[in-house]
Length: 96
Image (cartoon, rainbow, N blue to C red):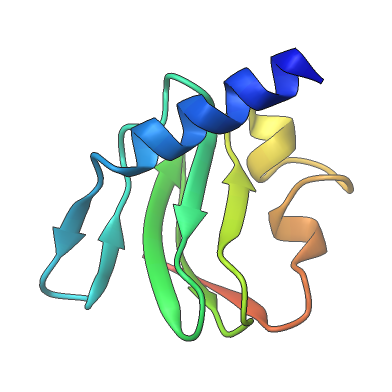
């Protein structure tokens, strides 16, 4: 349980440094190398995520923030078990 709490605290700390992207009205999260996770705000929030040669704008229409795994290509975009291959209900991804 302690390692999970440490990772959670690290995710929150790294998310606090995200810069708001004025053009898209969402967050431009390009510096997730520390933990390999990007946060997408809830209720219509969006984030531009460009990792491993794949760039997508993730739109979150759920009531909870979304944490997107991007540490490896397999977590983010490659293969049947990747995030982009298994988008949660209420979440969409469009090419950048």
